[in-house]
Length: 471
Image (cartoon, rainbow, N blue to C red; front, side, top):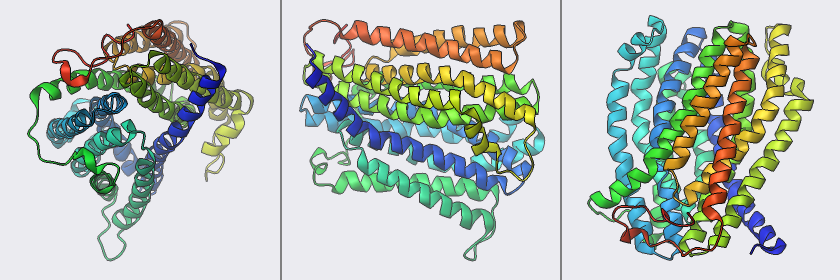
């Protein structure tokens, strides 16, 4: 039975864990934002190639990162159960998984130009994007390794080193852009390729720094995550089965927004510019509930490992409430002061933004005010379910909600009803609303009632730990 005191304690604990996680997410999205701004100084052709190349790279990388993110709930549950050997095993198998997933990415990005030409990109844009992919792809293995090590640290409730290293990586990326793109310190100006190499170097440095921390920190040395062990096929399969639905869910959601951008582009460059303003603003605020959702994964996982179903339920609902509360604040900003948000993106340009673009961006931000509430709720609910190691059902919910409800409504309202870009945004909102309702309902169903604690992970050859927990 949850009491007001225990609920308050859970909220405080979740906030303490979520703050550095949310700041880490904000640092990562700021890195991408700064990249776009600096590449834009190279001219429109370089910007087009950079945006296309980065979109392709980070879409496929995001899917693989989702798979490797299975390390976090695995470590969290093992840590809650005081099973140090399982913490080590999950982390080591996560590193092997990162290595295995990076191999097809390296091959795929080798053939970037012909694939982009097949996707009907302009020849010059395809060539520039391919050059970008050829360089940045070498950062992919290190980015995935960083994700595994991040899951190790965060699963143990230690997110602050990850934040510090991410901030350092952001600074290194900006400095690398300046030196490599524009030819400073006696080096040749590499332009767009310089930005790609800078990102790859930053990813590599972040992975090495977090690995050094994991190997040297006194509280983490006892896990021996870098002790040489051959891959364990059974453990690797369990981790992949847990992580694959996470990666697919990320791909489904990212694909929804990518396709919506293409659809809005059919209404002209002005509509696309307004869409990008609203979508980017919503993406920035989304980083906070995403961080809270990651905290929910850890808090719920710890409770599961400890055999505390009431604690798991409390942790999940605390995170869902915090995510919705933050998004209510940002929704009020978007609803009451959309002009302020639009000005951040358009008010300082050398060329005046057409008033129709500003007006449409404000209208889309009004829809985003509603959009925000559902987006924050579904992100935190999904994080709480990951703490239960419940990933397959959320993936199926995402497929139905994003592509069945969301895309179906976007096409019907945007084109069938003739509402244009606002119809597409209302469709996205309905899709997120469906996801929020279904995910929170599933978490409620999985966590009601008193049930036995989860079995240890190592004892489950066919099912992941927590599979039958709180069903």
